[in-house]
Structure formats: structure tokens, C-alpha cells
Image: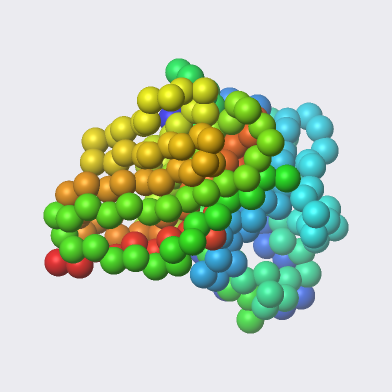
Length: 116
Length: 114
């Protein structure tokens, strides 16, 4: 499986500011995904990031609020812009990794964001 | 659109006992993949087990096994010989095909009691 790291692991931010979360993979992968997990909730997909193309956002998420970069096959960033307390969540990146019979998604350790 | 339902928000089990977590899903696809992920308090999402819909044989991984009923669209997880380290949130997830995002259920919080 892939080894995925995220930075920062946690942060406390003031409303109105922005935070960029980094996701680094130890191998080249085509597909990367960004998820949000609000307190006590399940995971919700924010966007799919392919290298060399614009990210594809899910309903309810917009590029101005969550700009994503995917400069190469091992790295992606998610920015949470103009933050409000409602953005307090865990943000996780994941990658699709080939398996013997099926591709499987593996997740980074997550970034816990608290907005005051 | 696919949906995944986990009807048990919380469950508890005595150490060394067996527990079964339920998951149902809705899809019109014939080929797809199902997963169980575990999220302990550390918040790391850990793959527990996966099942390909085209396989009739239920997947097993050590103490973890699934009961996959394709016609009923049911995918339950059985944990045998429960250990304290199994305490976590468990999420059932659906993947329509490779390179597509997962659809998650709301999760089941499992507590293993000594």
C-alpha cells in the first residue's frame, strides 16, 4: 500500500484566514481525493484531483472556497479559504492504489482543523 | 446515486466475544467493490477488509470476515475474538469502480469492554 503523509496534523485558526493542507504520497498515483469529516460525522468527498487537470468538485463545494493543486503525481494541496467555525473538521486525503483484484483507497492521517 | 446505510450508530461487545456490524447499500451497478474501514481515536482511516461484488466467496482477514449477500445488497462485518484495540468507528464504503471516490455510511461506533 501507499504511505501517505499530511501536514499539518492539526491547526487552530482564526476566522477569515486560510489554511493550506499538504498531502504527500511515497509513490506516483493517478487519483487523489480530498474528504471532509465534520465532528461526529462520516466522510464527505470534497473533490477529486488528477494530475494535470482541474479538480472535480462535489455538489456543495466550490473552487473559490477549497482550491486544490495537483502539481505532480505524488503531491496535492487543499486550501480552506476565508475560514469560519463551520469549517472545523478533519480533512483527509486518499489515494487509489492498485491491488491484485481491485484498487483500494488508502488514507492519510488527516488534518484536524479548528476555527475560532 | 449509490447510498450506504449503517443502521447501528453504536455497539458494544465483551472482550473475546464476537460482534457483527450491519451495512446495506443501494446501487444499480452489477460490478462494484465494498470495504470496511476502521477509524480509531487517532483518526487514521485503516482498511479492514474488502470484497469484490463478482466474487461469491466471502472475504476474510484474520479475525475479520464479511457476510456478503449481493441479492439483498447486504455487507456485514463480523469481528471474532474481539480485542480492546478493536474499539473504533467502523465505516462501510462502496466503490462503483476503480478510480472513483468512495461512498461512506454514517459509521458504527464499536466499544470493546474488558
